[in-house]
Length: 534
Image (cartoon, rainbow, N blue to C red):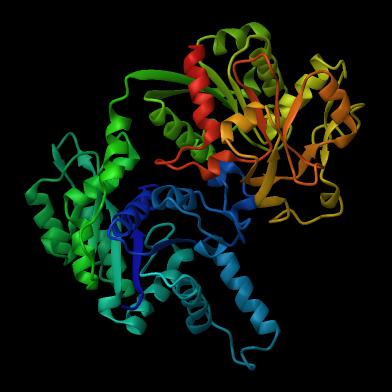
């Protein structure tokens, strides 16, 4: 059996949830024992999202091999319970950069370089590379944006050609569309879906399956109408209804026999699916017996997608602790005084400060760290959150007045956080941080060692600044424990203090390795400690 290719497109409006739908299809096919990989195509010219503002793009997700990716790669890894690579996310910038580089080297033998066939051939080669390098049964590729976007046209043309190259039995087009419900008329409106499919067909792509996003289930009448006017079979019109728990979506698709339809249309030779473990997780998620409230303190709180992996990791850990998760969002740029801060945080069971860049909101974060430390409130600091933890400890415990990071104050008398030595000569910003998996050696008889249950762990990084080795002794002498270090002992990976329910910071990002069926040990223990404190 050769590799099968599934292409997921979107229409009508953006943010319909193509990433979760794609991940759900991947999970369903994997449940049959198939080897599946997922790929996201982003039509923007940026090489990657690493230099983009979180308000523009949301979270930047990091893979094991150090690629800065679209946040949908996080959904893919969480649903597939695996690790993807830089090949699983491609952008227009990467495609054009590759083609121009080849042209400069003379690889096109003097030919005029054009969108068709050179750009489209490069796109197809990136899709097929996944099949060849991993010997997978199914490659599922999500095309970012919506049908009709100018920047997405080369990608749609490339996937149209894939059917010509590989045949109808080896390719499938799944289109996610929006079916609004008009309350005044008390009916669903299918015209937006019809127009979206018409535009896709004008490009030369006839969808095989329609996923219809709506806030409630379609009636048989609406389903038949969509089937008739969009030229798909009735059973291929699938409801993608709004749900409280996104992890329920694969089960909703399975109930409508979407997975069986895909298996049949692609001629896949499989047995019965095994979704039992996933079903049990969803049942636990929907009926917890306890509640835990976590204050997430950052400066991008107006766009929750900026902290997507943080949210999901807290959720995984809460489910594993039999708790319903409540998040209180705190804008650290608006912390005016200690009284306001105390009133805001008093009722939360735990406090988390996630990663970030830039000076805005940092002083608010440092005040929050001080509150958590002095009031023995369970606290987790990630990346910049750990750095704020070190700065606060230096200022208020070690007496280093004005201690800071050189990211925020070049002239600080106590630069307890400083650029990595190898970063000081780097001028380019994109893809030049300390990225991807790095090992961390855990110190015995520490909270970190207890959390992980082993001596060495590997976690994913995304940062330029580190705890300065010049101040390690001064900080350690006053009780700050560096319980996780790089194998050469030069880089501080985890900091904690004793005599506190949970006060821990990680320079790495444990949220990138949390999975629904295997929550991050750091998040699991943080939630558990927060519940005990409550």
